[in-house]
Image 1 (cartoon, helix red, strand yellow):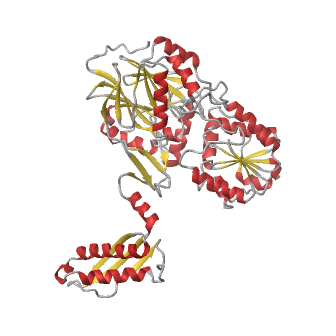
Image 2 (cartoon, rainbow, N blue to C red; image 1 turned 135 degrees about the vertical axis):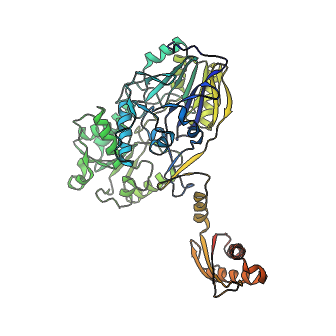
Image 3 (cartoon, helix red, strand yellow; image 1 turned 60 degrees about the vertical axis):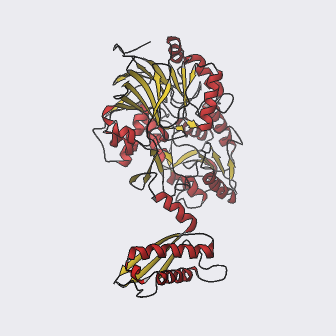
Length: 565
């Protein structure tokens, strides 16, 4: 085994694993490996990703791991290593990385190109970005960690597993992966290197669990490419294909299918342009493939065009949703046109995708999904692929990661059935000692979620999102009071309702019910106590909420503004 020459103190040194995100959920991946003494670990950070807001988080587009623990340890961070360029693995860097003192970043060429593009969109040019480009298969010393990047297959170029060697032993962090002998972009999974690591002896495997509940083996990306070519050749009119913008292999397959069918390919969606540019710059897209601007669409015969669109997850501002609603400035679909969803619906996006598909169906557009043909494959391993990896590596310890609870538990049980000596069931915030063995959960660290709310980064337990949920459910009533210094009403209260019915079932306006409740509440307060405007405001707030609740059946948010003359 390759190891640093430093002799470890096995009584005091340890190698630990701490997930701050990604273990107990899909997305928001942020993993820590610490080496050293318990009170002074040096940290290798692997990935720094986001997840996306749902209807439960109104107004929130991006959600990130809470890094308060890592902020306290920022002076001990050796570096940030990226396994690949999916948003759930690197999307939080613009927000979180500066908070950690700008530690050095290590990434493969394509991932580095994508990162530079992302940062250029969000920041001014940063000529001092401490970014080191590391080729696949290369080694780097990052603090006390000897790190080797091993080629894997996934739905993006250059996905890497990370072999982490310390004086105590070696751990393999798989990143996102599958087995695919023909992934159509970067090299397939490096079976020879993984087998060699297994022969040398692997102490622990920290492994992707996303498809651990599925039997068999994932189909190849090449099979999807062949099916797309067949479908596009058969389409009678315009074809639109939507997929994950980062899936370079799929973008290339659609482009080749369009060329084979004698069709022009137009691209709709800024995110796809960014990926295409990065893929061309790093040699992962054939320079002879022609990607045309969306403004060319209207000038092309409808049976001679393919539109490659963002919006496979129903995103309201993406190209496909705007096309479906008839609001896109350059693209439109007509009855008989086809839309191929070359993607899967991420859990939580079902309603959004359904809205887009229903809008397309209302316009008599034909919809094809992976339920109709092999137009999408997962980038994650099923149980057959997991078994193959475990057979190659033969780890002493397994730690399932990257999955919801049911995926993690299925993976843990599967690893136990394969005979792994120790299986650790970690979750976000657990500190797992991997070495020296036996492995064990030895501590907990604080974790949570951060919201990017507009341009502001805020903790998820702050109240604004909770207030928005209340507003969406029951509206808001605002009452304005003008009082004398003795607490008498100068005039009738003014009432404003938002998101509340105009009148109750008896036909009585709810604003009138609110006004009378406010007046009645003020007059019911003993005169000496009315001199306290804060007391009056709180009493009116409670009284108005109760009165509207009695008439409507819901209690709205209520705000009372007081002016004393």
